[in-house]
Amino acid sequence: MAFIRRYGFTAHFKSEASNYVMRYRGGRMVRSGRGLSFWFMPRHASIIEMPLVDRQATLFLKGNSQDFQDAAVQGTALWNIVDPEKLADRIDFSLNLATGGYYTDPIAKIEARLITLAEQTAMQYFAELPIRALLDGGVGPLRERLGSTLIGTSTLDDIGIAVVDLSLGKLAPSSELERALQTPTFESLQQKADEAMFERRALAVDKERAIAENELANKTELARRESELIAKESENTRARATAKAEAGRIESAADADRIQTVEGARNEAERERAAIYRDMPSDVLMGLAAREFAKKLQKIEHLNVNPDLLSALAAKFGQSSSTPAPS
Image (spheres, rainbow, N blue to C red):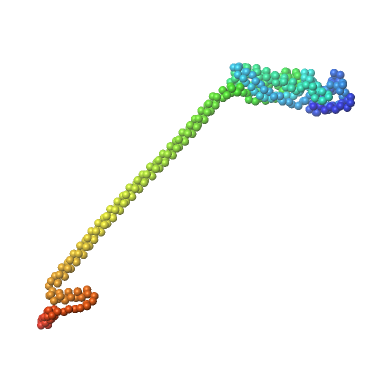
């Protein structure tokens, strides 16, 4: 926007260096250039100011495909003024000298013309192909078609502007058609996801079965080893019982032999003793009996000797004394 200050019947104008200014007086251009600054008489002057910087117009292009399906794409067009004097003849950039602003909105008019050309080109392109071909081709062919219409063509050169760059987003059908087109792909992906899930489940089941089989095999092996251990312990127990019984039998037989031997020796000794006692005189036996009896007595309180015993002993003693000694 220009800076205008009034001083009575005169005013001072100042513009930025990025703007192109044309000063008219009495309907005739008296001065033009970038970033001008000058004094003027408002009653007799007319001033035009144009921004020479790049500007960006937003594009929203839509149309019907050959098979009557909606298609749309968004983008931007970067443009600038290349011939201010040509543009001044087609678009009104006159300034309100009281406020320094435009009487109208010339930038909007230029962008409306750009957008109209772009929309017409896009509608023609969409109508040439079915929706599937449009989607498969993407925005590349459409950008080339728009470039041939907007960039470096006489259509815009005649009004003194130029489009220097185009940028387009994704070419998309209507939301209903997009969902319909996505359904096979979605179902295919869902099927693959289900198959992957089933494979994971099958793998998990196989692993669980392998684990269960391994546990069962371990339990079976443990049971077999336990059975073998029990059988071995039973066998050892039977062997120990058999050995113990055999040892008892041998010991019993040995005890029986020992008892038999001892009893036989004892009986033999008794027989020999009985034979000795049988050949001894009665008085000797009497004396031995008395001696044995005396060994077993701890204390003799009374001793009774009758006459018959003394007479018998005296007779024996007399017989012993009268017997001649051997020569």
